[in-house]
Length: 103
Image (cartoon, rainbow, N blue to C red; front, side):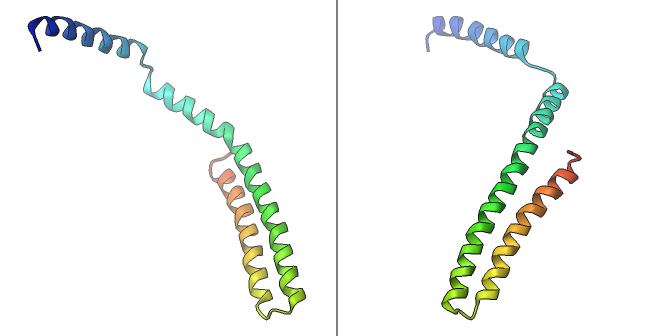
């Protein structure tokens, strides 16, 4: 670079750095804001997990019914697996809410 390039680049970088520092926020305020936003999404997230559990339960019931009607010997194992996955989703949603103290 030529000398004229440094004369332009250095003040520009200093002004950019001062602008970034001026618009920065307090770290604790940022953490509080992030905490508030994440807690705001918990209700929607747990409702989504309940809905996914209900859909999986319906799909599982259909699969188990098909196996039962066809006379497959492993129907109880498949039923236990589908039921277990639905219970897992409901329990995880409830535990996460209680763990983080969200009602």
